[in-house]
Length: 376
Ligand SMILES: Nc1ncnc2c1ncn2[C@@H]1O[C@H](COP(=O)(O)OP(=O)(O)OP(=O)(O)O)[C@@H](O)[C@H]1O
Ligand SMILES: [Mg+2]
Image 1 (cartoon, rainbow, N blue to C red):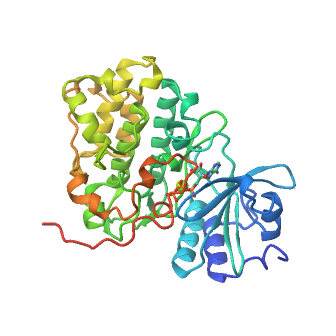
Image 2 (cartoon, protein in one colour):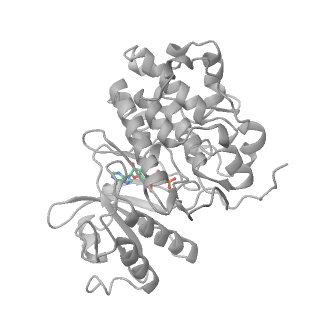
């Protein structure tokens, strides 16, 4: 590869990025050459591989000036992938928030597309809840609350503070990255949908990850901010309970986290919901409040869900009357009946740890176009 500009074969992407980032010389991002990223990642060696998702593989690297980076390398070049790359770059350029993983740079050569981020020393929330760090239990209750509030604030920024508003559409544990202080940074905006001013919802192809999908979105492709609220509710349940959004029971039956939690919540057995790995070390009122917020978020009617501002306030304990609401009930979406048949990806995704690929799911592939049934 030659100069940074010659690295970029696509005028369209270059243009999108420059529009998105405003001043081209903005110090916060730059165009990388393929050669530079190749050197930084030791030739994209297996040893440097951090993980793999729908878009491709992610590699740890170090630039010549000593900066630690994570390089996401697109696995296959086609027009769909190229489009998603452009969306990711465009959207990333619009956001600046302490709880959102911004762009460090990109490389768009003739044959490759790469996105460069800051390396997050504690990897993803998934790796701590269900992956390679799960047994170390570094996530005590305080950290879990910090992660819940921080990621809610990141999503709140996307929904309310950027114009046009952004719906993330793939909020999940592997897309919440943790820096060295366990501050959460929500990542992966390749699925994001920009919502024009004055539009309340849009109908779109379904992308995202089963288990986190709001029912109206999974079934009818109806996307609005409240789809992210639903996914956040599932994430919150996951954080509190340490359970996966969908788990496989003996006999191959799949059970959602809401199905599991429902009986405990209806009997107000909040303590029994908490991740046993915490060995009883948690703040009971905060647990109740977090479960209450999660229950509000995962209601099947999108209009009944709170917005992210309310979610943040409730989690912080600011929202008035928050102590009077513990007649919490959890509404379970019957994924088993209606949505499981959409899961074409086998069981691997449900059982694997964070090091494994979520091949068919995820940022840039996800569940492919669903049949768009009309609402009854
Ligand atoms: N900036 C980063 N710093 C550290 N690790 C990262 C970074 N970005 C990604 N990773 C790691 O790489 C893994 C793969 O990320 P990727 O976004 O490609 O896939 P995913 O989130 O697991 O699945 P999906 O494709 O569904 O989003 C993540 O789980 C995370 O552990
Ligand atoms: Mg991801």
